[in-house]
Length: 427
Image (tube, rainbow, N blue to C red; front, side, top):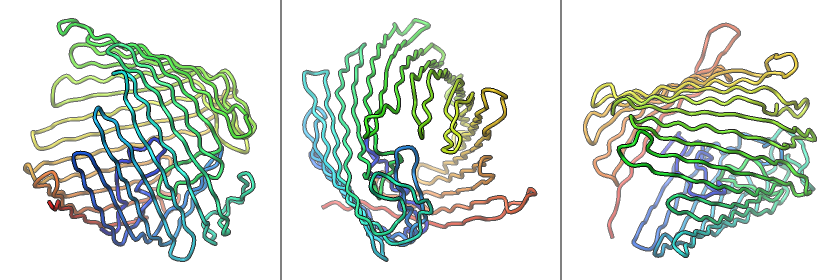
């Protein structure tokens, strides 16, 4: 495979694997084996341009890296009733020096019919390359963010305990990311923090002839501390979900933030409201809209402040013919100064996906997106042949455009062509 990020849905709560971090593979191989009790996933790649991400307490640092060898290996042993134990390792070795490794174990245990305990634990070992990929020279504890050959060791832990019955759902979660924890092939943008969350929900199912089909009521709370025992966040929230006849679903929520700390600025008493509704008048049409408004932090390290936030969006799906489907969406966001209502920022992202199914095996898809924040847009066509669930061939490309002057002229920023072939061998 050449020229396109490799995608895999990572099933880890610690975001250990995010294969878009393999950004420009010259060559890659993938092996998947799934038996009755054992599962194996193994991916290797030679990447010509490897993104470099460093997580911090209040922000992350990003640089465009050079060539590297990447490896992801995942093993899982499954047992009855959804119990399992697993092992995961990721490895990135840069061609010109430096490496990053993560090693982790995870598991799930169900007991007394309604209880589930889950955990993940990772260790990371990083030797920084000597490069100028990161411009900022900030401190994270006793290390700096520039890439000057330092060695960093860190760990991350996730643990949850759930109780689920027909009507009641209870969950308590704990996570931490140590100050020097990194995921070379994952996507962790914050460390030096500990999270504790609690969630309680009640749901009621009505008779099939009733106008109201399902009602859910939920409450929850989250508290975060950094590694100096400073409280970063404390909030409480509540939500209501309702499903009506006629394929109508709606959710409303309210969140109150007691405090949120950012770069020495402690925002207190922020409120936020949100609402969501979807409606499917027929099998060929699905309409959806959501909105959020209230108060939010302006995450500017030089001048943080509380602002009035507003977010609205729509997502839709139209089955125009049995073979043709159109899925447009639009999201708009803004943040205003609470005193004079001047804009801190505003912008929108418009996206459309067009799918055409020639037959059961052959399909075509094209995605177009315009990002008003970056003043850029892209097109991504894809032709896919899938004669059975285990044999896939596709060829596609991406053209990205951005504004090249103060006028309305756009030029090609990047262009990629890629292909993939996958075949199942039985032995």
